[in-house]
View 1 (cartoon, rainbow, N blue to C red):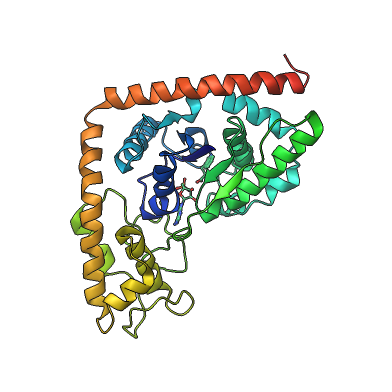
View 2 (cartoon, rainbow, N blue to C red):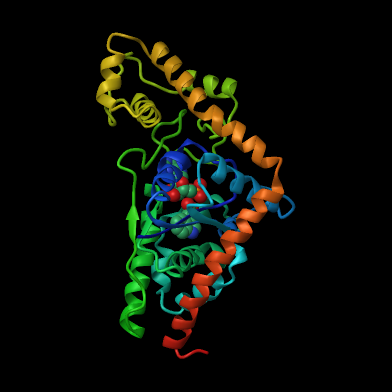
Length: 325
Ligand code: AMP
Ligand code: TRP
């Protein structure tokens, strides 16, 4: 099966990115034909610093590798190195109705948040994402829940294209993790964990042990001190149980049993120890990679070559079908 996914180089990746997206990627690379991308053209649709953009791209690439992506098993590359993404985005833009773009929740949220910077790129963001996916005739896209609406749009575009110009694209499916499709903020468990909320609510995947412990110990919970999963009434502790379960490979039921009669303090202590232990090797690996830019860039170059080869082929077919040369 052909798989594609990407993350924007806009800040340190966190537990939500890992559990919602990357953890699935690591499993998929074992069996499937996978392309994973640093989507830098998407990152510049919201305010950013051009002086540090390359550092962020490098940082995210190291994070991918440190988290467990293996360049022998998948292709890793930077979106802007394969120009066909922008060509296909332009072409798809001619068949997406404007109304569909204006309806997107992410467009509405981001234009509210950055009201001084509502650029056409922000509106066209989902077209570029559709191009990323369709360029490789992708069959499944492992993402967190917040990206499902964009995938719906991608599917619509693919269907419209196929109808108008003849069968070209496979209609790609979203692939959500059974658990952890949305990891919530530690300080406000009704809001998703997000890079822009880099205070106490968000744990970075490579954060140092002291910070991890501090953030888990001060995570918002309720006052009844019972370790039980109940998303509606006990959203804080339920979010922590989800994280515990995903890092320990135990079911929530097993964890509830283990902590029966114990208080939130004990549970949080165990959870922070678990996270520190599981994340330590990733942190060390990332530090090593950051010291070895030649290796990282050679992996990205190789990935871009592999991606370009596939992209060029699709573009020949598409230009041909659309009456272009
Ligand atoms: P972003 O940080 O928005 O570029 O997201 C990259 C990937 O991580 C996407 O597949 C998102 O759906 C996923 N993601 C982001 N935040 C969360 C979260 N809090 N919980 C689960 N998945 C998330
Ligand atoms: N829009 C996605 C996000 O914010 C990132 C992204 C861009 C993406 N292109 C993609 C994800 C293609 C999956 C497939 O998280």
